[in-house]
Length: 240
Length: 240
DNA sequence: ACGGGAACATGATTTATATCATGTTTTTGG
DNA sequence: CCAAAAACATGATATAAATCATGTTCCCGT
Image 1 (cartoon, rainbow over the protein chains, first blue to last red):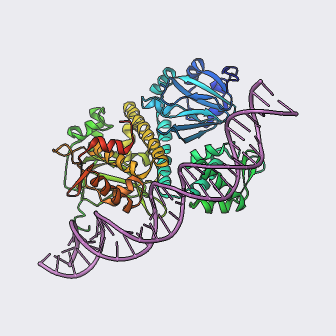
Image 2 (cartoon, rainbow over the protein chains, first blue to last red):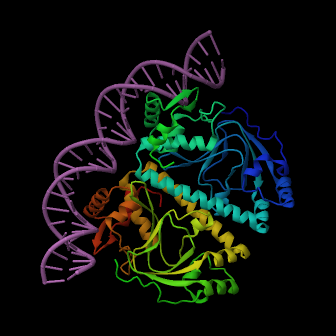
Image 3 (cartoon, helix red, strand yellow):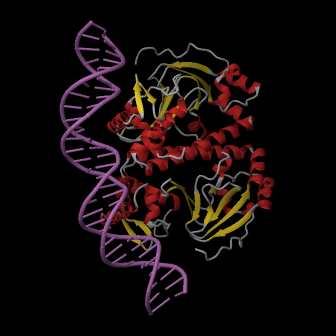
């Protein structure tokens, strides 16, 4: 945990960053990119390190260049709820900035991760001039809001078993498969999965074991392999 | 229900609309307002009438001028989840429009309601030119997204009793009290309250009866009067 | 390589909440 | 104004899921 606090060490120009093309910044003009580039700082985080903390004041945004990040909100009993899982091309920390609030969630690297921090001044300056970016952000927020509403409805109405199956499908959508075309390419603890589903850790463990017994999944190392997608979709009880 | 299908009948200029000052359109320029005004149409809805329907294609936005509206998303078993409650000054239907999706929820008047429909062309035209409006919308979406995240965490972690108490506090925040300073100024069925909390109707009925026995609330006609706010806050288990 | 802690697993038990059932009250439409 | 249908209420029961408890396995640091 106290291992490597070193956060610098990598460098990538915004103009040539591959992740940018997948992001809300894909349509920025060269001069806008240049502004980002000269004010940004690149940081590396080891698995388990905190990128930003709930309750803290946002000072800028984080562009994920490589790696994986979980973003979770803490309930008042201290139990976390995972509200977002990010990969390269995703931008983090913008919501708090845009609503002038403190961070409502904590971002933790769940894999060795490289991010670029863009200070809020540069971000807002570009936002002020680039109407295209505004629209891009609006679209992103509007889409996330719909997803959140769907999640709310699921939590209120669907049993844990279905939500757990759904969570696996979500992980597959987010991080994809490995080369074998079946193993979900992310490592999460059972507790993380429980916090994503919104259930007790033991329940998540039990349900995953059941899925294994039912030949829906297999455990491959710390990863989960989907061996019967049709059955998983059926278990999730969704119209896919 | 089939009573008065007549939806016209009222008229209010955007330029002089009092609700506008509470809305995302509070900073629009006169010429932008004029564009809204000449293309908008004013409609009245009786309690129970549908303003727009989940699955439908958005053709514009609805500005609530007077009345109350519930916005609910249907789970696949047909059970509704109330995701928003609107009053005058609130704008509805913009999320679907901004993310280029179909309506993800149905809006129903829960009181006699007056709304102004602004066609999407006029809306987007103003959005295109008014950077202030973009920022206003971004802020609104970002704030709603935080609220949604908080709701998700609550649903995942808090028991129904606490959430029910919280719902009453939310109703008070949204619609305020009557002149007596204690009766929440909105009429909702027990089923609506259940769909807001995310629980079974019987459970909501039971808990409200309990709150009544515990001298936390009283039922005044179809409305709920909070007679022990401190106890209600404590029951909700929130840091107020 | 080993000890210790975290993560995983699984059984037993409790509990919150949904569901089922039935009755009463209130509202609504003809 | 009356019949029928919602809405409300409450009890009994079932059940999903949390919690409690214990043991095993897997890592990780020294």
